[in-house]
Structures are given as structure tokens and as C-alpha cells.
Length: 450
Image (tube, rainbow, N blue to C red; front, top):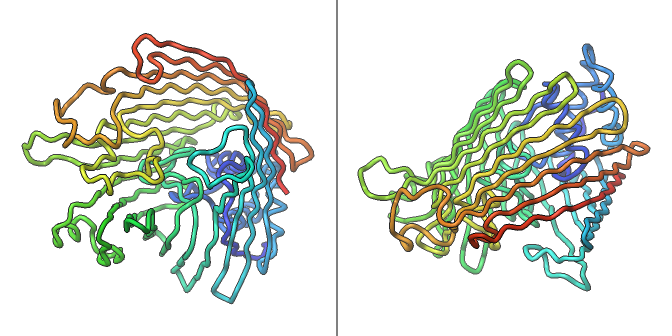
């Protein structure tokens, strides 16, 4: 058995390693935790288990597990992870970055981590940091992690993706530079409790807090309940206490902050992983003429014919989800929804096939269809008024269909080359009736993992 290495820095969510992890998870060889990005220490623990218990592994399983060898040999006192990325898309778009992550041990129970991403692109990221000569430097991670027994406390900056979606969640999705605050985790054998607190805007005292309790049977079943709260204006110390229900805390001090409830579940049956999330922003248990605000996501991942990794996902977000009549508590951060990135009044379905095999070439295809109504997270029912059960999606609906075929190839173990060709079509572009458009695109991407 390899030595247990506890490294706190995380794997980038867009790293090619994520595809290897997903393969192993769907095969039932790794867990699928609710919170991402994955810490390197957690990945190494998973590899430790797979190396020791290798009976029954296929040739492809062993090949992919071997790709993690550079991570398994990291030094606990100090180590780093480096990614290089080059991307070109026709017509005339390019992006490149170097992603640097490092961390180590400060004391027997204390670790540190930091991460930077240096990026240059033909189009600047409007939600990202202030540019300098077309360069943007993302301060993506910087924290101290303290571990005492079963309790882990992170203090500093870290990104979060909550839920089982590929790149976004209904409660909390990744921000361009992560979230500043703290996280407390208490993982027990079958129960896990966690609490996240972050400051969104110090000048307005806009803060976000979330706590979750989950039940898990490893590699088989995960179920959980989360409560999130966004508040602003006057700072309320009571919300720092994660052991009280936020709904009752708010009610008792007569505040009207933005509360979300979420139920999540994931189960593995007959080689297929099923997951679901239900978000309750508001639900009318009285007869008031006021809308329910609901969202949900369902997802399935499995293998067809043993080698065809198949994924289908559907997301539905009702018209007034994430809205609030007090602008300071609208469920957004730097102009982007904290939850589902497309906001509200939208549904989104995506399906993909990837042929995974022992050769370096993995071909794939992907289809995505989106319907986006005219609703906005900045236009609540209290201001818009009108029908409290409007058609979904509402108004002039923009419909987008994207089809992609491509392939990824591993070159010398540390390089991954990807090429895609696709077509995207819009109906009622930007909610303008009759404005239909389409475009063909080609992309090529090179990753280097050092």
C-alpha cells in the first residue's frame, strides 16, 4: 500500500484527468462526492484503494489508473501540479493559459494550498479579473486547511461545484476566481455534515452560507439535504451558526433574506449511475396567488456495449427561481447566477457518447438543446406581476441546438490533443421573433499535464 498523502490543493475542473476519474466512477471503482473540485489528497486515497484491490480490473482500468502515477508520487511536504492549455476556434478565437497549483504541510494538522491561472485570449473574460495587456491572472485558490480527528476546516479561497452535474449545479456553481470564506466538513462513516460561508461583496455585507447533511453508502447511494441563504445589508452573526435551520433563524429575527432548499440523491444500479436534484426557492403551502419557484436536474451515466460512455442530463429552472424583490439578495455573484449559469426560465438537455478504449484515440459526439424564456433573475414576480402561472418558457423563446463530433488523443502520456467540429443553430436569437441563425465551428485544443 502506498503512503497516505494528504494534499489540500485541487484538480482543475477542466483538466483531462477529470475524464479518467469519470470513467472510473461510472465503472463503480471510485466514489462520486457531492462537492467538487476534488482535492489531490482525496484522488490519491482513491488510487491507493484501486492499486491494492486490483482483482477484476480490466486492461483499460489498469491503463487509466496508471495515468495517475505522477500524482501518487507527490511529496506531502510540498508539491505542485501544472497544466498548460492552448485552444483555437474558427473563426479567429484563441485562448491559452498556464494553471499552477501547489501546496504542502505547515504543521502536523495544518496544510496550505494556492493556485494561479495566467490566461490570454482574443476575447477578455468580462467576469474575470482586471486585464493587463490582454492578460488576466486568476487567483483561484489560497487557503489553510486544519484537520483534527474527523473535522476539517478550510479558511481562505476555494472554488465549489455542488451537485452531480458535469460543470454546474443548481445551488452553487464555480465562480471565475472562487469564493472567499471558510468551509467546515465532518465526514463520518455514513453521515457527512458540511458548512460553507463566503463573502460575496464586503461593501454591501452580501454573504452566502450553506449547510448540508448527507447519508452515504460508498459507491452505491448518496442522499442529502442542503439549505442555502444569501443575505446583505446588515450583517447577521446568527447566520454564522450552521447548527440552526436558516429558515427558523430568519423567521425569529423577522428578516426577509433569500433562502433555498435542495434535496439531492445519487444511486448506482446495474452499472448505471442515476442522480437528481430538486431546488425549492419558494413553495406555496397556502392559497395565496403567488408562484412556486422550483428547479430540478436529472442525470444518467452508463456504459453501452462495455466501452461507450453514455450520459444524458436534463435541467429545468422555473421562471422566478433565484429572484428576490430586494436587489441586494438576488441569487447572483458578479452578474452571474450563483446556481445554474443560464439563470431562470430555462430548460437544458444534453446527451453525449464517448468510445473509450485501450488505444490513445477516444472519439465522441455531443448534442445540446436549450430553451430560454424572457424571464430574468433581476425581474421578480413582485415587480413584473401578471399571471403567477405563466407558460414555460415564457415570452419569445430563444431555442439553441448544438451538435458536436470530435476526438481526443493522448500523446506521450502527458499531452492530450482534442479536435471538434460542430454546428449551432438559433431560433428567435436573443428573443427576437423570426431572427434565426446558424454557424459552423471548428476547434483544436492541446493540454499538457506536468
